[in-house]
Each structure stands twice: as structure tokens, then as C-alpha cells.
Length: 233
Image (cartoon, rainbow, N blue to C red; front, top):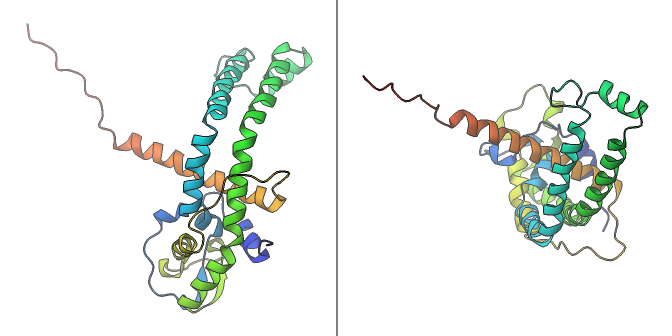
């Protein structure tokens, strides 16, 4: 079954800085115009979360090897950090290219190896996303009927809308009912479409931002370290 163009157009409008649907407050009854973030709804669905857990287990060996090679890659790149600021800028990279540094060839080789190791997991995730996306229109139709929605817009297309107008959380709940689980067993010769690849990138951006914010929040909630009181003489 082909993926609805409505979904893909809406997904393309989702801002990279979108929050997880779990961060959106509970919504009241919506009537008329509503807002939604299809990518967030899919990313927050139980089917997608479960698929990610299964992928992490199934491809654990590959992912562990890829992480180890990434560390090796960073060690190699450190050799190009001539100003010792712990990053390789364009000037340092251009210098290495002009000098035909063997490190660049080694890094490229490791990049190829990392991509090869990650490819099965990435493809499995894309296949899971495709299955959920194929059911999105059914879930959206159910929410539209229940909420009596006439128009759905991206939140970024409006200057203001109350929280009650956002039906993303409702879409996630409906997706949970419509497609409770998906398979990560990729069929032979299956390849993701460009639309699915774009959707996957958007979801990965959402996950990265959520992880970064969670880490920042954890740092701010940790109690400050206090120095021990000096001992008296």
C-alpha cells in the first residue's frame, strides 16, 4: 500500500526542534482547525519504540563494532588537530588533503566499515517506519472523525494555537491501537523510498534532540559537589 501524500507533506513541515509527543500536555476536545506533527506521532508510537528495542538486540554485535570503530576514527582524526582544540576545522582538513595525509584514507576506510555495520539496523528501522507510516492515514481519519476536525495544519504555520488544538498525542494513541506492532525482518531486495528515508532522518533528529535535552536536564538536577570542610588543627 502506498504512503499517503498527506502524511509526507505534513511530515516535511515538521520542525527539527520538535519535542516528543510525551512533552505535549493533555488535550481537550478539538473542533474545526487542529495542529499536528505526524513525525512526532510516529516516533512516539509503541510500535516504533518496540521495533527500536528489537533492533538494538538483534543487531547488537554490529552496533557494538560500529561504536568501537567510531572511537578509532576519533583517535585518527585527533592526529589532524594541529591547534589542539579537540576538533578538526576546515583549515586543518584542507591542509591534510593538500599534504595527502594517510590518515584521511584510513578515516574513509573506517567510515565505509561503520556504514556497512550500521546498514542492517538502519534498514530495519526504515522498514518499521514504513509499516507505521502506511497506517498513519487510517489513524488520522479516526482522530479527525472523533475530534470533528476540518483542517490540520503544522504548528509552525500558525502564529498562535492553544494546546487543545494539538492532536499529535491523539494521533500517537490511535497509532498504538491501529498498528500495535511491526516487523523488523526486512524482505529480500527491499529498499526504502526517498520519502521514508527523509522521514527516518527527521525522526532521528527528534531522538537526538530529546536525548540532548534529557542529558542537559540531568546535569541541572544533579546536586552540586561541595568541598569537604577543612579539618581543624
